[in-house]
Image (cartoon, rainbow, N blue to C red):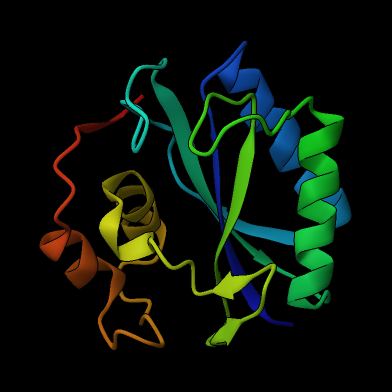
Length: 159
């Protein structure tokens, strides 16, 4: 089964509870949880006048296609109360596909690997915790190398 890395994040309500609920829903609707990073807190990225985010990276094995994963993720986000109002705005939960095995794909709905992964310390730090040697299929660098070269200087602290 393909290896899938997902980033969970949220900055509204009971952030810890939303991460827990998302993890449980992903286990039942997407795949088998193999590993999860610690939970990290970071200031908002992109749109900075909002509460701090909690983030966590999960590694799952899935029998689903990338499109099926995306559909299930969107359903989970809606079930947990996500409302898409503004780009990079506050949200109760956000789930991003980081990697789907070594697949490189770009469609109107989905780009894999995540196109901003290498620019976001809040993504790379938890990802490096569980998969430091994972090789980015486009950039040809490990997650640890990407973290060391990341231009983002926002503080990302472990909870």
